[in-house]
Length: 308
Image 1 (cartoon, rainbow, N blue to C red):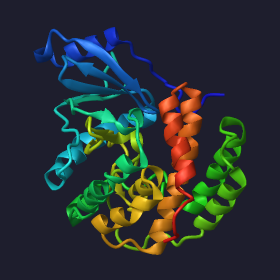
Image 2: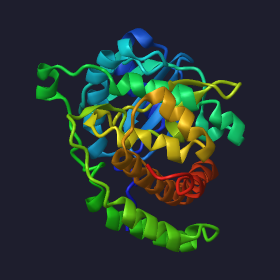
Image 3: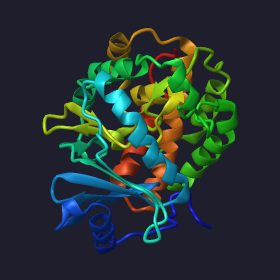
């Protein structure tokens, strides 16, 4: 049976080179280096200074166009580096999906970096400040008329509960070092948290270690992969406090972010556990120990610390 990340279209570097040269002749001669593959996209470094992302599945095809439209609106409000779309190609006979290119952002993804609790904690305030800026971006009535919402119910914890429970039970085989009974009880309790009642705000929508860029000193420098950006529940992004930070650093995160009510904090913890179980499954499935380790960390750390 196909897994959620199974590609519908696979692209070789030579094929990517040809597509880029045909769509953007000014970039010739194009040099292409594979950078990595995720659930939705394949990424290539182009001419040493650009990153091009190609959807691997139909469901991701609209997401690159979403980034092209939304990211220029967000960038002026955010001090961290985020991608700046410069090249957008529409679907064609040569490739069935649109694809997009940005200037390369320097740094390593946090899932490829060795961490201690101290180096993680040093990023608590920067993460909180980044999310305060993002979630505080004004949203006009005109923007609300076209902006994407939470079409896949990311913040509906009741709807998500059964799937999360299934993934937790699978950990008995995938990660036997994780005690699953307490996690099952915890997510069931967290799913009872009331939903958001305030108007939705801009959220990254898929914020975890793989989408954080850090420098050689372990300092947060940027946030990438914005295909899930939408107007939604802040808890979706606040989950990074549980999936990436040690429990001892969460108060500093909250101080930098601002007020977070108890139900939002509970929904964020639920989402972090969801990420943890999903990353273990994905990491095992694609033989990526770094992603698997990021999931294990989230599963161990998210349940700890005080409730909202």
